Amino acid sequence: MQGGGREARDNHGFDVFQRMMRPRSVAIVGMSAKPNTPSHAVLRNLQLNEFAGDIHLIGRSEAIVEGLPIRTDMAALPQNIDVAILAVPAAGVEEALTQCVDRKVGVAAIFASGFAEVGEQERDRQERIGRLARDGGVSVVGPNCIGYTNFVDGFPVAFASVSKVPRVSAGTRDAVAIVAQSGGLGNHLRLGLDARGVAVSYTISTGNEMGLGLGDFVNYLLSDEATRVIVVYAEHIRQPAAFLEAAAKARTVGKAVVMLHPGRGARAKEAAKSHTGALVGDYAVMRAQCERAGVLLVDTLDEMMDATEILARYPKPSRGGLGVLTFSGAFCGIAHDFCEDMGVVIPALSEKTEAELKPQVPAFIPPKNPLDLGTQPLWQPELVQIGLKALLNEPAIGGIALSIPAGAPKYANAYLENIIAARKTSEKPLVVAMLGDGSPLPPEFIQSARDNKIVLSRSSDRSLRAMGAVLKWGTRPQASPPGPVTA
Image 1 (tube, rainbow, N blue to C red):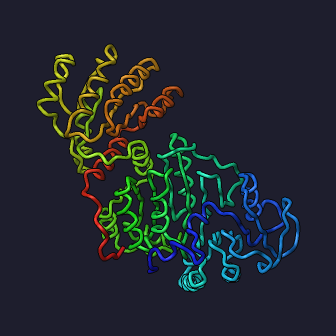
Image 2: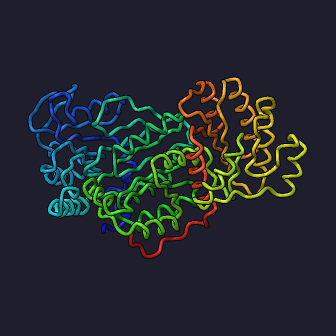
Image 3: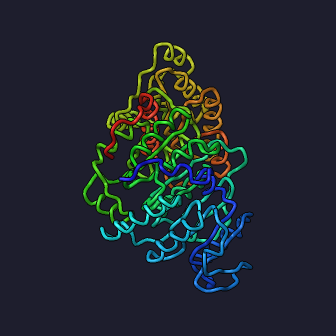
């Protein structure tokens, strides 16, 4: 097991992560003059995104590519280049890293697979090369990764496609950073969050973590002003002390760490080993230690996406049970069963709240939680606002899940107007499940909901599960400093 946090600063006094994310100079090692190659895609991405620093190319043959010369010897390059991007096969990584050490490169990103994920011999080789880099002062991202992207400044280290990086808006303070041992899954999460209007500040594919690991990246992101939520996909926490320490610190600085970690069963552990070379330990121990450190652990990709959006829009941990508003009496029983299985409380309304709510609703609507408004909102949409305000003002309730039919646009818009009016009175998290599954919602409806911090869902099950997870996380005691770790 590697020690955590050893690579927080390099030998030149520059912060490693500043050099990694905001470099002044980049070298592409393994550059080919041929188009449609990984190295060429890396270069085109840098140029398309108007990288203003120096770009150096190293390859086997001299040539001119995109107006830049390819040199055949790294000794010809200046020392202290910030980032070297190694677009070489596994067999060439050790030589390339040795040259990076000689030129005092700050960070090396390694795309190549063929290391610990293949077998024990390759694992030993990965560890040997990792020691070479660490002893030489080079911080490593990867191997077996697809790179990383800084969406704040528009800096990509990527070979899978060539595209303009969509930068987050200036002054953003509620973005999500994605740190994933699977590059493909990390990109899936980014696209999903983007489709929901949730800003993404960084995506980091960590791969096999020969050098820098999850804890290093989480710790760095705690001081990033644009980032509010850090999403982690991990198959093995290779530096548990560093990760748990960073996770415990996150809660104290007002940020959330959401993690999906497969490996409960034997076949999942085997899949992780062949994917990123992960040697998964005791899942129950890992979960207990991470929850003690303040991590919100989820069990599915859907839950990760939903909980992340809630926390991005409502950053303050919310303490209390779940309030439920619905137009269906049947859903009241469904919600009770669902929440009981999750260990989430649906608290009864206080006498004060009941007394205040009762004269504002028709006599046939019992003032209780879950609150069933029946079909009356079809004629009195203002009942949605009245009921929602009552639930939001109830001290025992920490967050609200609404489950209502979308209906015709005029009804959906009327409900939303009242939801927005009620939400302005409280900062408690709110998820609205507009039932109807595949039935479309008007674009202006979706945009209005996003502009007003309303988290939309098309599934009552998903909204209950995500809100339940967030509330359980919010009511958990303050994160404990990590003790002995075995994750």
